[in-house]
Image (cartoon, rainbow over the protein chains, first blue to last red):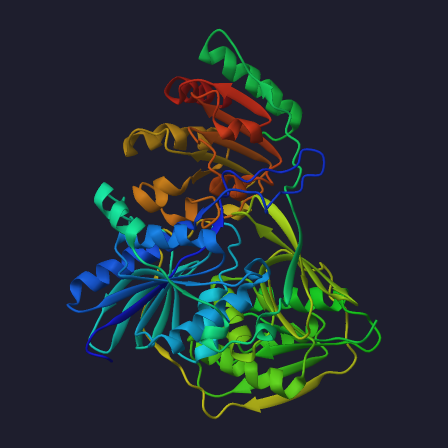
Length: 264
Length: 315
């Protein structure tokens, strides 16, 4: 390990799930025009990176985003939480980059810009939630990965992490370099202050292109194309049960559920 | 349509059987082959069960067993190199999704996770998967084969297709390189409840003021012969209920006959967990709560008045 811990953290400027709207007639979600914001778990990733840095003198947190010009907003959020450096990987055709392209660019950037000891990512993005970028990055680099981390301790030459699975929690140890993915249970991201926002807005973002990272355009050609995104139609009766008293409400609901045939 | 070679793997043998049945149903029948991977540490009867599910071939990897995703990925990679599949299906569990990414990254293959339906088309592999925190379904076309696709439990074809002969191969992996080391495994507290199997669920949300008040929710669940579910804050934040009660995107997905949501506002991450329920009842004091848009029967009122009345009515 380098004597100064190098922590990288990836942030995605994704579709705001709460504000995305579907076309009423077709049910298709208009992703191009949907409002975007920093993906939820990525803020947990930045928070965890910043907490680790604060325990290790000299450690540096580099936030990186792959996307279009608007991804600067995600980097601003990361710096406002406490990231030291900000890197944007971008190109005019960023919109067609799939998870493979994003992981390849993150891997190339880490190689070109000095490497990392820890690379922290959200375990899934709020909009896509494939959970692929972190493990893909580790697979491409051939380094250790621990997904679904809920508690993290840094030691001299590696990490000890609690990995959350469906029915159990594992305690797992890995040496640097290691890729970690975290969910929102790991911490509560701090709310930026006026001063931290001001600092973030002034922070210079290092902008690099795939060519700067020696990645050929063909290597980023999409292999997975999203053809449509639609909101499934689950018709609900939306019957309002009202009554003069709680008992009357309860009796009416009971009648309705008996008619539905769902009571024991 | 050209023949497919589909490789199936899950650390959960039951899910691996589903993958085999799904692959048999999805691939053109004449020349296609469906193979199943058995890694070190799998149950002794795994290969027999996968053959019974319809696998034409079994690829047994030998070497040291390890739960490390890099080791799992290395084992699968050895089989991929030896059998040249057109498609690798992996069970979309948490481990499975991690291994999917790892394997796809190592071999530079296209990948998709959380898949609920799959079509092998001439112009690519089309998959249905959840998007927008589970509130939408995306159709993705994977333009290049082979691809690694992680399929959710419950997506498989229901019946097994018999095979007449089985091609069994062994792949010794000498340098199984685990990159992480597991020192402890702890079962999750209270992880006994299988809420997915409940016919009726009464779910409590942030409307509950204190832990002691769970008693009235439990009383209602009892009156309805229901299990108690909860939203994220009650499991992950306050810890009033264990994770096995948690319904939502990162909790459990349920589709009971009756779903009663009490004091649940209806965050999108919760709705994805209950959207497929047959009949939904919502009780909330806020008439504008998003849960009401997903409800068949809506009661606007204070849960502390409504629930005791419901307990009386259903007792």
